[in-house]
Amino acid sequence: MASDKSDSMNYTELSTVISHALRHEPWRYDLELDEEGWASIKELLLALQKCKPAWKNLQKKIYLI
Image (cartoon, rainbow, N blue to C red; front, side, top):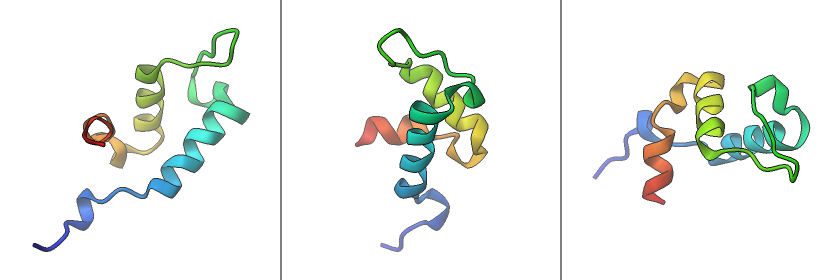
C-alpha cells in the first residue's frame, strides 16, 4: 500500500511549533497560559490550525496516536 504524502505529518516541525508556542511566545498564537503555564488542548489545536492550514486534521491525527 503506497503512502499518501498529502496525509503525512511532519512531527519534527509540529513539535518545534508547539514548543515555541508554549515556551517562548504564547501571545503570538493567541494562547492563554494558566498560572502554572498550562494551555487548553483545544486552544492549542486551534492555534496550530491557524498557523498552518495543512494541520486542519490535526485533532483527528492526535486521537489516532
